[in-house]
Amino acid sequence: MFEDKTLICKDCGNEFIFTAGEQEFYAEKGFENEPSRCKECRENRKRGGNRGERETFEATCAQCGGIARLPFRPREDGRPVYCSDCFARQKENG
Image 1 (tube, rainbow, N blue to C red):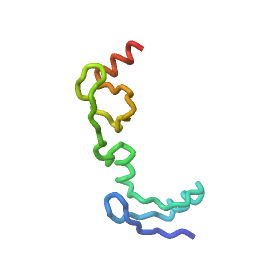
Image 2 (image 1 turned 180 degrees about the horizontal axis):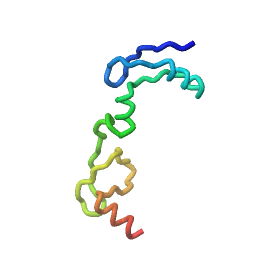
Image 3 (image 1 turned 120 degrees about the horizontal axis):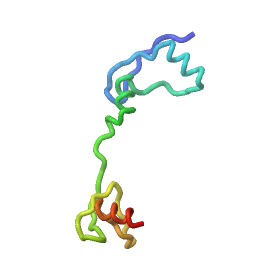
Image 4 (image 1 turned 90 degrees about the vertical axis):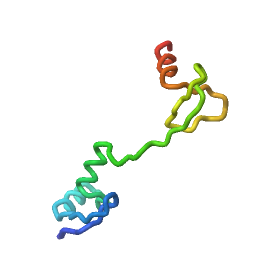
């Protein structure tokens, strides 16, 4: 019923085989989409590789006046933003 298929990995661009056995497994589990990554890229993705650099934003720390590096764009509504050290102290003091 199933035959091996050659697919192209969307991450590395290399060809990989979607075996008949894998297709049968996908069908049994009700998966509708074929895999889009080769085994190596799937494993790399699971380990957290290939995520690239996260965009960071800078703001002035509301407590010490130093530079706060943030993984999000700070709001412009006047909410205080803290650097890592001051944020940790805030958390410790409740």
